Amino acid sequence: MANITKEVWSIIESDLAIEKNLSQELINTRALARYLTDKYSLKASLDSVISAIRRFETKTKFIEVEKKLHNLFKDAIIKSRNNVACITIAHNSHNPLEIIKSIKKAEHMRIAVGNASSRLMVDEGKLKETTSHIPSNLIEKIEHDLSELSVTIDEKAIKTKGVLARIANEISLANINIEEIVISPPEFLIYVKQEHILKTYESVLKLRNKEF
Image (cartoon, rainbow, N blue to C red; front, side, top):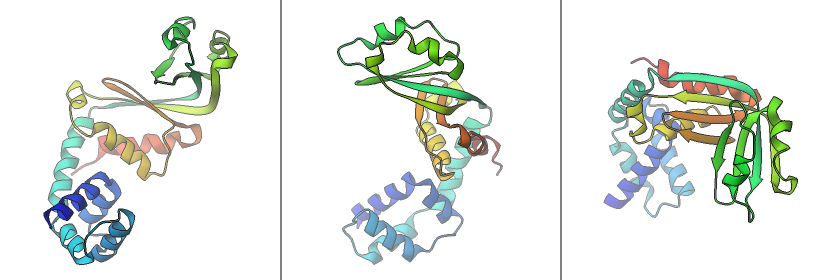
């Protein structure tokens, strides 16, 4: 029983929507138990899952976590900019740093380096100039019509568990897909389709403005 309780609690804690609905008593326990059992193939009886959900001290715990996160985000600086393009560069046998060095530094250019490819986020107005420094066979794709949301938080928040997950969860609850994330502590740069930037901004702003 202890194992299924731990597993159910872990699932609830990882899903902000479920935890919010439980804390506000907006979700039917039996229906939730069926959903979790089916989705996560839980090896336990329905009654055991229901019992685990009922023992989850969601209201007090959720409010405590919300207050802690609110304190971290209350002084956050949130900014946005539009007309961003994302260039995906394949590494192949090339050194990605050498490719990036060959590019004349563009204003507001952001770089995310992965194992197989790198991404450059640049202003649409600098796109032609930037791509002229990159061999065409290395450009895998270019995404247009992106917007950047910049969230700068206090240094102490960087060491707090779950900060990035909380930002991503709020955006996910608004049914918005994150196209790219670049982290440069204490700043988080989140890229979404331009048509969703206002909704994204409002979602993250809730973390700062929430009152208890």
